Image: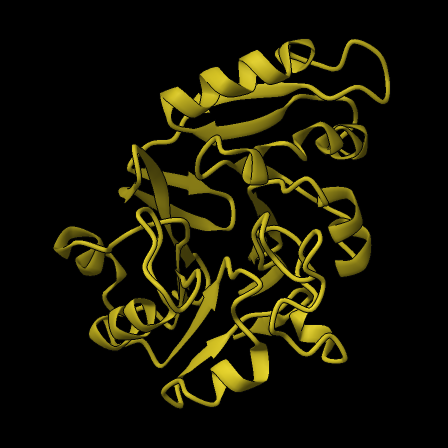
Length: 259
């Protein structure tokens, strides 16, 4: 299994508009963050989770050249607005619609923003086409299984995702943009090899976990290694990571993990 962190920041990431330093060391490339998305490869099946506004440049930077399935965790702008650039992967798949999975509310937002892409195949070569499907509790793909669970995120719910690779049984948990992780979600995460959690900033937020809350959640889930993502300009990579438990780390744009 391979996990690629394409982006690990928010709209208030580093550098921030009219506040370039943001308390972070800009000489450290790990502090330069685009908005949050990941790419997961299970037995050569490529799953993209979310498409940040910088999605095209993230693909180029991370060398993403294949995409089989797209999952949208929720419909906030920092996760959905890069979906138009999925058009290139429709071309690479021979001009067929790309399977797009999400909740009913998020799929409705996709229809609103990208009405020209809701069709069985691209209108012409170079256009996107999305085959919209409700994300089930368990989705079987050629490379493995993706389980989903609703997590609280302010006034909405997001999809928490658990990936299990078919050949190896390796397990990845991805819980971004959430205020908490309840007992049901923690049970789903049991036995994970890698856990990724929302760790927005040091001080409390109404719809995200703080760095401290995320680290505590990682401890309670008990995976061998955990990563925090979706960080604002308030989180300096080196100084924050120095205060985390040894098995909890800050992710950074372009980080690749194979296990």
